[in-house]
Length: 331
Length: 114
Ligand SMILES: [Cu+2]
Image (cartoon, rainbow over all chains, first blue to last red):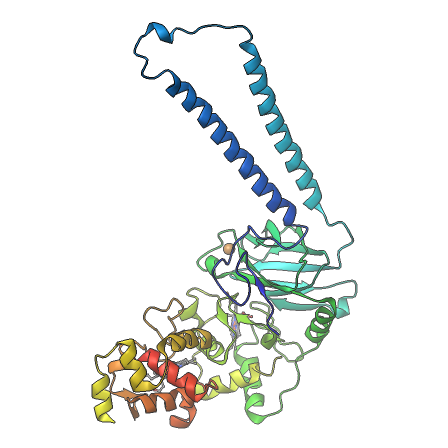
C-alpha cells in the first residue's frame, strides 16, 4: 500500500518537488510553530511597510517647495503624543510576539498525553538506526532509515550519535534536534494523517551528509501493530538452493557489518537487514528498493554514495544473484 | 538488422526514436529512474546515473553490439532489457521483470543517448 507522501506541499507519491518544505505541517508538535512562523513574518512585514510608508511620506511631502525657510519646523501643540503612540504600538507588537512565542514554546515542549512509544534513534555516518524497545526488552527490534509510528499518537524519540554530531529533522512533523555522541536528546512528534514524511540530517556530518535522509511512516494503529509484530520476527529460513547459497555468502561477506536476526550474521556497523524488503528505499533514502538498485548497491555502493562506509563487494555475478535472491527473502 | 542499426546511428530525435522502437522515450526515462539502472551504469544527464558495475550507457545509440553479443537493433535491445539473463546467463545485470512495452520505452530512451 503506497501512502501519500507529506513532504510539505506535494500531494501524493514520491514526488521530490518540495522534499524539505516546512510550510505545511501535520501534527501538534509542528503546527503551532508553523502558525507562529507565519504570524511573526506577517507582523514583521507589516512593520517594515508602515515604517517605510511613514518615512517616504515625510521625505516626499515637502519636496519641490524650493524655499529653505519653508523647511523650518513648525512646532505645534501635542507633538509628544506621537512619540507615545509610536512607543505604545511598538510595545504591543513586541510584547504580543514575545507572549505568542513563549506560549508556542510551552505548547510544543512535551506532548499533551502520555507518548504511545519511545524510539531510540542513532545517527550514523550516513544512515539512521531506529530501535523500538518498549517496556519488554525481549520485544525490542531494530530497523533503519524508515521509522514507522502509529498515526494520531505522540511518539518520543531519544536521539544520540554513533560517531559525529548529526541532527534529526522531519520538517512536516518536528523541528531540529541534534544527535550527539555520548548524550541523549529527546524530541517528540505526532502525525495526524497517515502517510510518509521525509526527514534529513541537518548537521553537516561528512562527505555523504546530503544523502542521509529518512522517512517517518505514519500507519493506522492496527497496521502499525502488524508492522511491529512482523519486525520482531527473526528472518525466515530460506528454502530455494540459490537463496541458501546466498545466505552463506551473506554470512561470510556481510555478516561482520550487518545483522540478520536468526542467522550468525550479527554485525552492527551497518543497518539491520532482517526485514530489508519491508523498506521502500536503500542507502538512507538514496535509491528505490528495486532489484536493479539492490544489485548495483551490493556490488559497488561506492559509485552511488562515494565514501560510504560499505566497501565494494565485487563478488562474481553468480554470487551476486544468489545474494540478491537471499536478500529478497528478508520480508 | 544491420540496416536498422545504421539508420539509427546519429538519430536522436524523439519522433524518429518512437518510429524505430515503438516506445516512448519520456516514459522510458522515468522507468530508468524507477528501476535505478543508474546504480550499475553511468548514464549521461541522470543525477542518479553514476553506477560502476556495468558499462557506461553514453553513446549506446551508436554502439554496434549489445553486451558483446547481439547486434544493436531495437528488437534486440528490447530483448536484452527484458531478459539479460537468458541472453548472457550469469552476467551481473538482473532480469528486472520489465514488460515488453516497458522494455520498448526504455529502448526508445536509450536511443536518445548518442
Ligand atoms: Cu549529517
